[in-house]
Image (cartoon, rainbow, N blue to C red; front, side, top):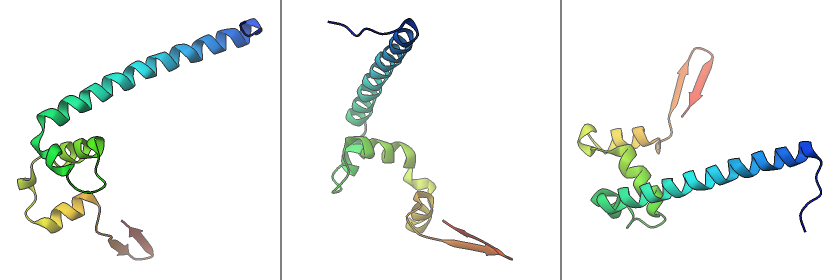
Length: 97
């Protein structure tokens, strides 16, 4: 037994279901890509050994950080990653980062 919808609502429901199916497909493609990158990335596999880091976060960090040699020291990496709080003030404006 199907829903008894007015034509307008039926069209809206069909459009939403089409969007949902498209997104489900894209999510599946993205998951497959993350799996592929993880399997090919020693860095992501190493990062995953950190407690709290799953496969997706490990791949994200490995891809985002990329080549560690571009950072002159750990402090620069920390600053890039945004894990060290900072305050920048000028006149009457203050930015917390």
